[in-house]
Image 1 (cartoon, rainbow, N blue to C red):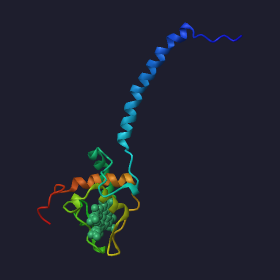
Image 2 (tube, rainbow, N blue to C red; image 1 turned 30 degrees about the horizontal axis):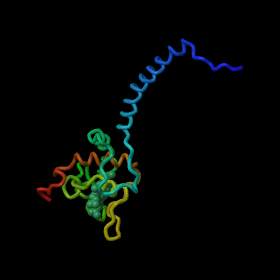
Image 3 (cartoon, protein in one colour; image 1 turned 135 degrees about the vertical axis):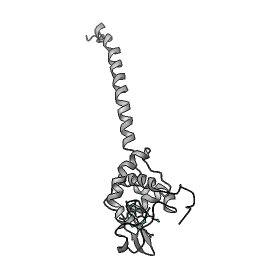
Image 4 (spheres, protein in one colour; image 1 turned 90 degrees about the vertical axis):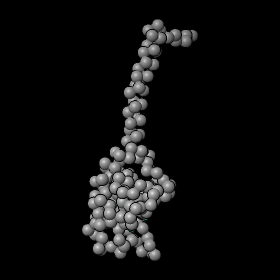
Length: 162
Ligand code: HEC
Protein backbone atom coordinates (compact mmCIF):
# COMPACT_ATOMS: atom_id res chain seq x y z
CA UNK A 1 0.00 0.00 0.00
CA UNK A 2 1.23 3.50 -0.87
CA UNK A 3 1.49 5.89 2.03
CA UNK A 4 0.81 9.60 1.35
CA UNK A 5 4.12 11.41 1.55
CA UNK A 6 4.36 13.53 4.64
CA UNK A 7 6.47 16.69 4.33
CA UNK A 8 9.50 16.40 6.52
CA UNK A 9 10.27 18.99 9.14
CA UNK A 10 13.13 20.32 7.09
CA UNK A 11 10.91 20.96 4.04
CA UNK A 12 8.31 22.78 6.08
CA UNK A 13 11.09 24.99 7.40
CA UNK A 14 12.13 25.91 3.83
CA UNK A 15 8.73 27.25 2.82
CA UNK A 16 8.94 30.64 4.58
CA UNK A 17 12.42 31.09 3.11
CA UNK A 18 11.08 30.40 -0.37
CA UNK A 19 8.20 32.85 0.14
CA UNK A 20 10.63 35.45 1.42
CA UNK A 21 12.96 35.09 -1.53
CA UNK A 22 10.02 35.35 -3.96
CA UNK A 23 9.00 38.55 -2.19
CA UNK A 24 12.54 39.92 -2.50
CA UNK A 25 12.66 39.03 -6.20
CA UNK A 26 9.41 40.94 -6.69
CA UNK A 27 10.70 43.95 -4.81
CA UNK A 28 13.68 44.06 -7.16
CA UNK A 29 11.95 43.13 -10.42
CA UNK A 30 8.81 45.25 -10.12
CA UNK A 31 10.56 48.64 -10.12
CA UNK A 32 12.77 47.51 -13.03
CA UNK A 33 9.64 46.52 -14.94
CA UNK A 34 7.91 49.81 -14.14
CA UNK A 35 10.92 51.89 -15.15
CA UNK A 36 11.08 49.86 -18.36
CA UNK A 37 7.43 50.65 -19.10
CA UNK A 38 8.00 54.36 -18.54
CA UNK A 39 10.94 54.33 -20.95
CA UNK A 40 8.97 52.76 -23.79
CA UNK A 41 5.22 53.46 -23.55
CA UNK A 42 2.75 51.50 -25.66
CA UNK A 43 2.30 53.57 -28.79
CA UNK A 44 -1.11 53.86 -30.45
CA UNK A 45 -1.32 52.25 -33.89
CA UNK A 46 -1.85 54.67 -36.77
CA UNK A 47 -5.54 53.81 -37.22
CA UNK A 48 -6.16 54.72 -33.54
CA UNK A 49 -4.51 58.14 -33.75
CA UNK A 50 -6.95 61.03 -33.99
CA UNK A 51 -6.17 64.70 -33.98
CA UNK A 52 -6.78 64.74 -30.22
CA UNK A 53 -4.41 61.90 -29.33
CA UNK A 54 -1.88 62.98 -26.72
CA UNK A 55 1.80 62.28 -26.98
CA UNK A 56 2.30 58.83 -25.39
CA UNK A 57 5.63 59.97 -23.90
CA UNK A 58 4.73 61.32 -20.49
CA UNK A 59 8.24 62.57 -19.80
CA UNK A 60 8.13 65.25 -22.48
CA UNK A 61 11.46 66.75 -21.51
CA UNK A 62 13.29 63.49 -22.01
CA UNK A 63 11.48 62.75 -25.28
CA UNK A 64 12.33 66.25 -26.54
CA UNK A 65 16.03 65.67 -25.85
CA UNK A 66 15.98 62.77 -28.31
CA UNK A 67 13.56 64.61 -30.59
CA UNK A 68 15.98 67.45 -31.21
CA UNK A 69 18.38 65.33 -33.28
CA UNK A 70 15.45 63.76 -35.14
CA UNK A 71 14.05 67.19 -35.95
CA UNK A 72 17.38 68.44 -37.25
CA UNK A 73 17.77 65.30 -39.42
CA UNK A 74 14.24 65.08 -40.78
CA UNK A 75 12.48 68.44 -40.62
CA UNK A 76 14.95 71.32 -40.54
CA UNK A 77 15.80 71.04 -44.25
CA UNK A 78 12.35 72.52 -44.93
CA UNK A 79 11.25 74.00 -41.59
CA UNK A 80 14.61 75.49 -40.57
CA UNK A 81 16.78 74.79 -37.52
CA UNK A 82 14.39 76.62 -35.20
CA UNK A 83 11.19 75.56 -36.93
CA UNK A 84 10.39 78.98 -38.36
CA UNK A 85 9.73 77.69 -41.86
CA UNK A 86 13.01 78.95 -43.29
CA UNK A 87 14.93 75.77 -44.19
CA UNK A 88 17.25 75.65 -47.22
CA UNK A 89 14.78 73.55 -49.30
CA UNK A 90 11.88 75.97 -49.03
CA UNK A 91 12.40 77.46 -52.51
CA UNK A 92 11.96 74.05 -54.18
CA UNK A 93 8.55 73.35 -52.59
CA UNK A 94 5.05 74.13 -53.88
CA UNK A 95 4.03 75.59 -50.50
CA UNK A 96 5.86 77.59 -47.84
CA UNK A 97 6.90 75.29 -44.97
CA UNK A 98 4.81 76.12 -41.93
CA UNK A 99 6.27 78.13 -39.08
CA UNK A 100 6.00 75.62 -36.24
CA UNK A 101 6.74 78.13 -33.49
CA UNK A 102 3.57 80.23 -33.75
CA UNK A 103 -0.15 79.57 -34.01
CA UNK A 104 -2.00 77.99 -35.62
CA UNK A 105 0.54 75.15 -35.82
CA UNK A 106 1.96 75.76 -32.33
CA UNK A 107 -1.50 74.97 -30.94
CA UNK A 108 -2.05 71.80 -32.93
CA UNK A 109 -2.75 68.82 -30.72
CA UNK A 110 -0.05 66.13 -30.73
CA UNK A 111 -2.19 63.70 -32.74
CA UNK A 112 -2.84 66.21 -35.50
CA UNK A 113 0.88 66.85 -35.85
CA UNK A 114 1.56 63.11 -35.87
CA UNK A 115 -0.89 62.56 -38.73
CA UNK A 116 0.66 65.36 -40.81
CA UNK A 117 4.13 63.89 -40.39
CA UNK A 118 3.02 60.29 -41.01
CA UNK A 119 0.64 60.97 -43.92
CA UNK A 120 1.80 64.32 -45.31
CA UNK A 121 -0.47 67.24 -46.14
CA UNK A 122 -2.73 67.36 -49.15
CA UNK A 123 -4.13 70.67 -50.42
CA UNK A 124 -6.38 70.72 -53.50
CA UNK A 125 -5.17 67.27 -54.51
CA UNK A 126 -1.51 68.21 -54.26
CA UNK A 127 0.91 66.97 -51.64
CA UNK A 128 2.27 70.19 -50.15
CA UNK A 129 4.22 68.38 -47.42
CA UNK A 130 5.35 64.85 -48.28
CA UNK A 131 4.99 62.21 -45.57
CA UNK A 132 8.23 61.67 -43.65
CA UNK A 133 8.45 57.98 -44.45
CA UNK A 134 11.74 56.97 -42.92
CA UNK A 135 10.73 57.84 -39.36
CA UNK A 136 9.36 55.21 -36.96
CA UNK A 137 6.29 56.10 -34.89
CA UNK A 138 8.28 56.54 -31.65
CA UNK A 139 10.66 58.90 -33.43
CA UNK A 140 7.74 61.02 -34.64
CA UNK A 141 6.29 61.34 -31.13
CA UNK A 142 9.72 62.37 -29.80
CA UNK A 143 10.09 64.93 -32.59
CA UNK A 144 6.70 66.39 -31.67
CA UNK A 145 7.84 66.74 -28.05
CA UNK A 146 10.79 68.75 -29.36
CA UNK A 147 8.63 70.89 -31.67
CA UNK A 148 6.66 71.85 -28.53
CA UNK A 149 9.78 73.41 -27.04
CA UNK A 150 10.18 75.67 -30.09
CA UNK A 151 6.85 77.41 -29.81
CA UNK A 152 6.86 81.05 -28.93
CA UNK A 153 3.12 81.43 -28.43
CA UNK A 154 1.42 79.56 -25.61
CA UNK A 155 -0.92 76.79 -26.78
CA UNK A 156 -4.53 77.84 -27.15
CA UNK A 157 -3.78 81.56 -27.31
CA UNK A 158 -3.70 83.75 -30.36
CA UNK A 159 -0.24 84.77 -31.54
CA UNK A 160 0.74 88.37 -30.89
CA UNK A 161 2.16 88.68 -34.39
CA UNK A 162 1.51 86.64 -37.50
C1 HEC B 1 10.17 68.35 -47.88
C2 HEC B 1 9.95 69.45 -46.97
C3 HEC B 1 9.37 69.15 -45.62
C4 HEC B 1 9.82 68.28 -44.66
C5 HEC B 1 11.03 67.38 -44.72
C6 HEC B 1 8.92 68.42 -43.52
N1 HEC B 1 7.94 69.33 -43.79
FE1 HEC B 1 6.46 69.89 -42.57
N2 HEC B 1 5.67 71.10 -44.01
C7 HEC B 1 6.27 71.33 -45.23
C8 HEC B 1 5.44 72.25 -45.97
C9 HEC B 1 5.74 72.79 -47.37
C10 HEC B 1 4.34 72.56 -45.16
C11 HEC B 1 3.16 73.49 -45.46
C12 HEC B 1 2.07 72.69 -46.10
C13 HEC B 1 0.87 73.55 -46.46
O1 HEC B 1 0.77 74.66 -45.96
O2 HEC B 1 0.02 73.07 -47.21
C14 HEC B 1 4.52 71.81 -43.93
C15 HEC B 1 3.63 71.81 -42.86
C16 HEC B 1 3.86 71.23 -41.65
C17 HEC B 1 2.97 71.29 -40.52
C18 HEC B 1 1.61 72.01 -40.49
C19 HEC B 1 0.60 71.16 -41.19
C20 HEC B 1 -0.77 71.78 -41.23
O3 HEC B 1 -1.75 71.00 -41.20
O4 HEC B 1 -0.91 72.99 -41.29
C21 HEC B 1 3.57 70.63 -39.49
C22 HEC B 1 3.03 70.42 -38.09
C23 HEC B 1 4.82 70.13 -40.00
N3 HEC B 1 4.96 70.49 -41.31
C24 HEC B 1 5.74 69.43 -39.24
C25 HEC B 1 6.86 68.80 -39.78
C26 HEC B 1 7.77 67.99 -39.01
C27 HEC B 1 7.72 67.83 -37.50
C28 HEC B 1 8.68 67.49 -39.88
C29 HEC B 1 9.77 66.52 -39.59
C30 HEC B 1 9.38 65.25 -39.00
C31 HEC B 1 8.35 68.00 -41.19
N4 HEC B 1 7.25 68.79 -41.08
C32 HEC B 1 9.06 67.72 -42.35
C33 HEC B 1 7.43 70.78 -45.71
C34 HEC B 1 8.18 69.81 -45.05
